Length: 76
View 1 (cartoon, rainbow, N blue to C red):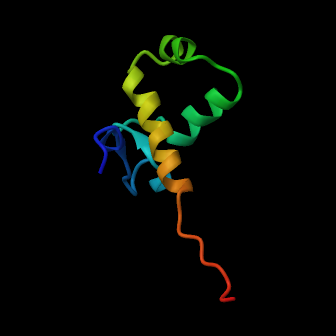
View 2 (view 1 turned 90 degrees about the horizontal axis):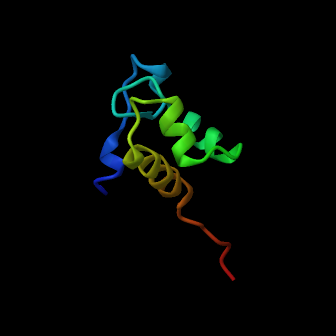
């Protein structure tokens, strides 16, 4: 596992078991939504002072790893 993704925690008792940043209640999806809405890394870090720059990168890395899945094609 990539060290960035080690910053992501999954705990059934926190945020409904959704992936969060370092055991906080800040979900990976929250960080991704902020980025998708146009927020800069600096804006996110300013608005959420408990986050670190590496947390944002970890959220992106985690999302990328979830999007990379095996594609099974039909036999020719």
